[in-house]
Image (cartoon, rainbow, N blue to C red; front, side, top):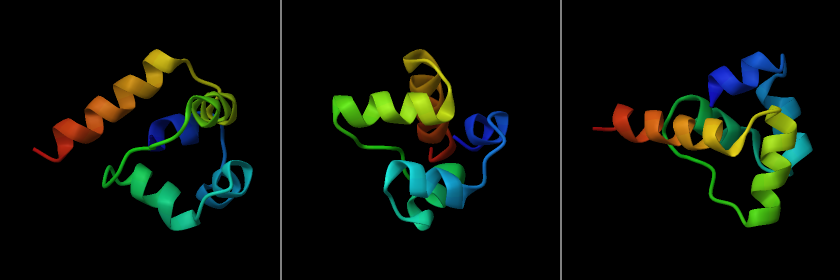
Length: 69
């Protein structure tokens, strides 16, 4: 997730405000501690903020799961 955030040139604080989540939530995504759990409309907003496709989000989640093994 951090790679996606850096690709759009935004700080964790900016992402948090745009998505209406805590900064710690975005940081946990960045550090691969957790993955976004959202409704379909929330996922659409996430893809818009990160300017990515659904497949890129899935890949980021898979990387998070692999890092926790």
